[in-house]
Length: 327
Image 1: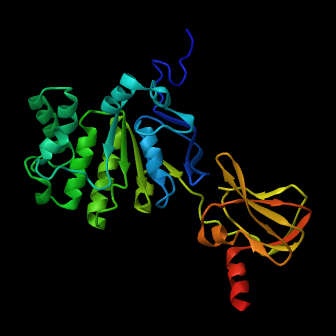
Image 2 (image 1 turned 90 degrees about the vertical axis):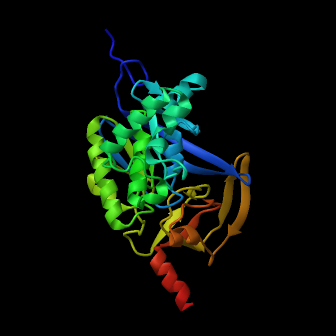
Image 3 (image 1 turned 30 degrees about the vertical axis):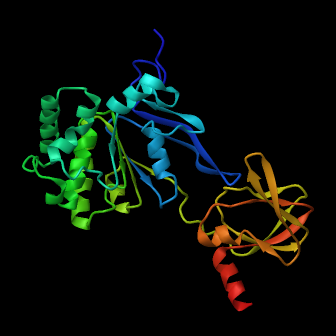
């Protein structure tokens, strides 16, 4: 008997993200939000996606939830090939295999807690209304709100509303629960309670993926996926670098480290577009480039190439800043 592989029936792999790429075309150029991201989470693991706004956390959650198709790469959840699913198979995945917890709670003000939690079951007509409400009561009791089932959102604290949102994500008993910034709108006491709840839920055999910029979630995580590199501050001071004619000094979307001051030679700056490249500038001796990305912590917004043999001084951002201030 052959061993099942990821994506085949019977392969209980948890969550496998393999070489995931997501690109957007804007104003003619391509922005790569996810760059060959890979990780694996076994059933029962809590994964924290850590990074600032704009780092691709929400994009990744949308891909995991089957709401957005990646440009390349694959996502498998147990025996479901999420990236290959379409039509009825994709609808089934969204309804039965994945639960969502939204940043802003997204509770319906006119409904009670139990009615809010039951909404996914009622809308999908998976069970009767009475059974849906009974399941909602069970889940609310599990998250510590058994005495608040008939309260409306306006009668609940922020932490309690977040627990209702978590319960709604769990009501279909999904294999994967994804939560977008679940502590963003909570004070530290409420956030601590929600973090404790995720810690309890991970023991129930489902994969939980939480996006956040809140480092308080790190200690309870089984796995931390950093969506951007740690702040890059080169460990070398200013030093000379040499590039042969035609060499690429850095590429668009690369992490930014040094600012370059040209001592001799010429450097072409180009922007990589969907259908080619756009020439931005040709720089010579005494001019500098790469300063914005390095000083602001952004990826490179263009590609730099040596037109001829080039000698340059590579400067850490803080040294370049001092040089400019002295000038």
